[in-house]
Amino acid sequence: MKHVTYLKKLNTNALSLATAVALVVCGFTTGCSSQNIQPADSANREVINQVSLLQGLTFGDYNGSVKVGRLKQLGDTGIGTFDSLNGELIMLDGVVYRARYDGAIEVVDNEETVPFANVTFLDADKTFELNSLNNIGDLKTELNKKIKESGDNRFYVVRIDGTFDKIGYRSEYAQKKPYKPLAKVMETDQTFFENKNVKGTVVGLYCPEYMGDLNAVGWHFHFITADKKAGGHVFEVNAKNLTVTMDRTDNFFMILPDNEMFNSFDLTIDQSEDIKKVETGEK
Image 1: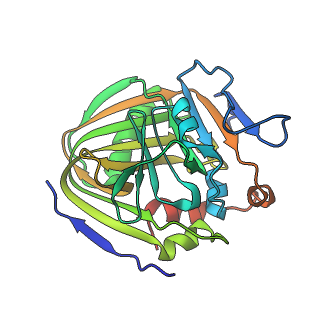
Image 2 (image 1 turned 180 degrees about the vertical axis):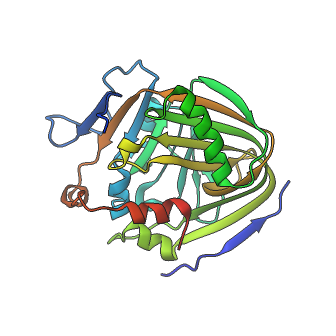
Image 3 (image 1 turned 45 degrees about the vertical axis):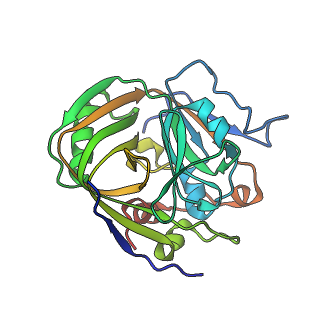
C-alpha cells in the first residue's frame, strides 16, 4: 500500500576512536546475546550506547534486535526507531515513547524491540538559554558554538525544553517484508506535521565527523510535546527562550545485530546522499 506524504497542522498552544569504541558482534562470541551485553564499565553513565549502524537501517534492516527494557538499562534519554520502522523513538526521563505514523505518541512496552537507537544517561555538563531561533540551521549553529568550547570530536546529547513558536517533524508507516531501503520508504511512507505555540522537548544527539561510517555526523533531533500527545523526527524549528541541558559523553558502545540481512550488507557502499535525504526530510 502506498501512503501519500502530507502536511498536517496542529494549532495547539583522521582520528581513531579514542573515545573507547566497543564493537560487539553477536554470533561471533560464544553465548553472546544482545539482551545481556554490558558496556566495559556498566557503572559508567558517560557512554553513548548505540544499537546497530544507521547505515544498516538505511539499507533496510528494520529487524528489532534489542528489547526496550534492555535499552532502559543503558540510558534514560535517547532517540531511535522500532521493529519494522514502526515510528520514531523518543526516550525521555527513562520512558520510551513512540511517535506513530500519524504523529500521535504512545508509551512502548518493554518487550518491543528496536533495530536502531542511541541512548545514554543525561547528566548535565552545561545548561544555557537559546533566545531566538528562526530555523533548524540556527539551532545547529548555536549548539555547535557550545560544543566548540568542549571539543567537537566528542559526543553530545541535549535536552531542549520550552515553548516552540513553530516546529516541523515527521514519522513513518510501519514496513512489511521484504523491506525497502530507508530512502525509498521516505519517498512514499513518511508523514509531515507542523505544530505551533506548543510546549515540548527536543532530544538531540551529536556525532563527530569520524563517525560517518557508523551514524549520521552532526545533529539529529526528535521532539515530543509536554503533554506527551505528539512528536517525531525534527526537520524545522522556530522558537525563543529555550532551556538546553547538554551532556558531553566520551565513550561509545555498539551492539550489532545478528541476522542474515545485516550480515549480507556491503557496508563499503557510500550512503551519504540517502542519509542526507532521511535526515532533512527531502523527498
